[in-house]
Amino acid sequence: MIFNLLSPLADDFILFNLIRYTTFRAGAACMTALFVALAFGPMVIRFLRAHQNGGQPIREDGPQSHLVTKKGTPTMGGVLILLSLTVSTLLWADLRNGFVWVVLMVTLGYGALGFADDWLKVTKRNTKGVSGRQKLITQALIGLAAALWMAWLMPAHLSDKLALPFFKELLIPFGFVFPLLAMLVMMGSSNAVNLTDGLDGLAIVPVMIAAGVFALIAYLVGNRIFADYLQLHAVPGSGELAVFCSALIGASLGFLWFNAPPAAVFMGDTGSLALGGALGAVAVATKHEVVLAIVGGLFVVETVSVIIQVFWFKRTGRRVFLMAPLHHHFEKKGWAEPTIVIRFWIIAMVLALVGLSTLKIR
Image (tube, rainbow, N blue to C red; front, top):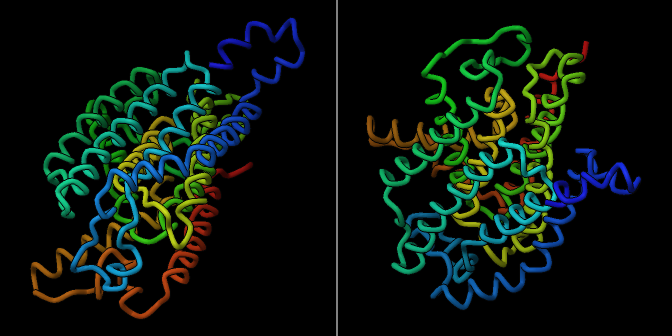
């Protein structure tokens, strides 16, 4: 909004020329989202606590320590993230850019689904919420609509193809099936972040790390000169997603202020489904779907641990892990919660560096 209002004045007022720089607006978006989150955080937490009878329901079959340490903590803190992210993006992004709107649609659509899930949990006082079938159908519809929209926004030679890291010139054609693949990327990313969100601060920092990587990728891919130099597939217009990703970092930092151990609020499915969907949508828009699996490798590992646990238990009646997702396995082994969280952050940072190594400079 600020870009759209002030950009026409940039030629007459030198100061306003800063608005044309994506890097300036990305920094401003990050700081704006952080300010909004810190300013409204206490108010949102008080509101959630007042309207949730006992906070987030705790799984009876989960770690027993959670029944004591996390009981009564309000959930649905993802509302604060989405508020900060949306306000900042609308203020600083170029609202004529279709990629901004499609990524916002996925983020808010998945956030609304998560909100409904959290609301059912806190009102019915159980951990079930929206059924798995309803969740997947809703995610699929939103993801497919977004994939078709992004295919329309992209150059024809990229719209139905999958790019691979390191193999700079290789594009795998999927034809009319590609929107389904893109849909699965968004759904998978959304649910993977949701599974990882089980300890104070565990999911939000890896989300910020991934958002930082994709802010850089979006900026490079959206700039023809940089994209050609790095042998990346240029996607005109996708550079504006650097502003969105920066706003996501700021909103996440603000949320972390209140989610740091011991958490004053949990993001709930409202936050985790939305944040995962946002990362998946940005990855599809920038043609770096495979890189997301590397940068977000922590989310992948957490998801795979659940798949392995369920598959093996159904076949043999025995468990591979003491408990899934993987972070609960280490809790059962006696690791302290801060130890698990910080070590997982380290893993996320290492994977982000591996993902960045795919941006090979000649």
